[in-house]
Image 1 (cartoon, one colour):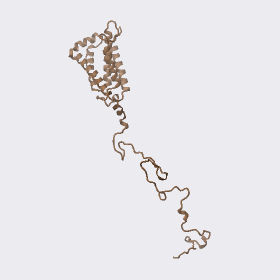
Image 2 (image 1 turned 120 degrees about the vertical axis):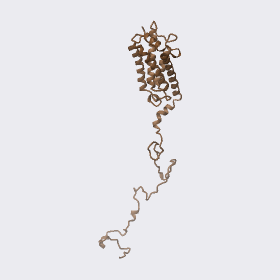
Image 3 (image 1 turned 180 degrees about the vertical axis):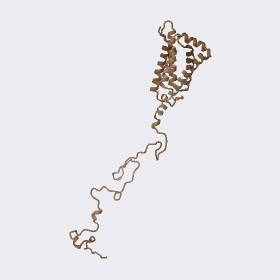
Image 4 (image 1 turned 30 degrees about the horizontal axis):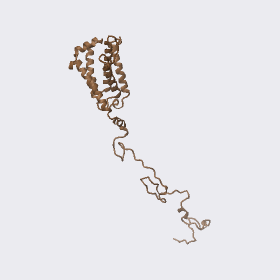
Length: 271
């Protein structure tokens, strides 16, 4: 091993002494400029200190450092690191229903009123309760009104009234039940008009038809508004947001009432 003085130059293995004559005297094993950053150097983890993160985000941090805002992931089922709970967007339709106040209670009263009335009239027609005419009297009244197949219509009309009334009271298949009641009330108005000797429509009682017209309005309102949440249909679409199904039920109820009169009676109610 040999030592080198200050004037000696470092040489690579196999390099001659004359090879370093063109090298400046200031050259060293390690160039001092290697430790100096370039003018375009922006810093790294070794030479630049990272400022502390301020979670409040109120004031700018030292050195003009502004961290990106932290956005918490939305809560929902199946996400890691957050509490598992119901999705807020999925309950939005039910929130709208919850804000309706006493509307559901009003629909319940409307359904119960019409349903109980239909059941009571059906029991009077079929069993003669509460001073009703019974099967024979109801059959004779249907035949006198001009309907064909009065024996079948006796059971169909009386039983249909009871069934529609029970479904309305329970809030089950509400648009269908209200549409059936609507068809029955339309025929009741047509029978009343045709039974008038002059074939004239009158509104007010005792000879008018305001009672059946009021029942028609109630049935139409139930078809369009739906049963509300206080019924067995509370989770169905026609209870939360009635639209297409209610319109179809309304059209079928009106068409069914008119078709029943045309095909089973056929008389012109206006004379």
